[in-house]
Length: 52
Image (cartoon, rainbow, N blue to C red):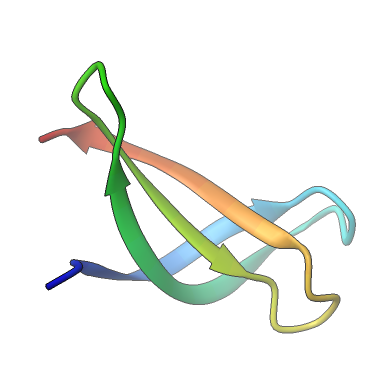
């Protein structure tokens, strides 16, 4: 079961912070990253979270 995340991230295309919901993924180095989609323009949003 994938962990979900709800919060805000900076959209590079809109140049504003946007509220989004998405999945939490863990990289090889142990960093957690939330990935979702901008509700306005549809661009992929990423937010770096703390270590797992």
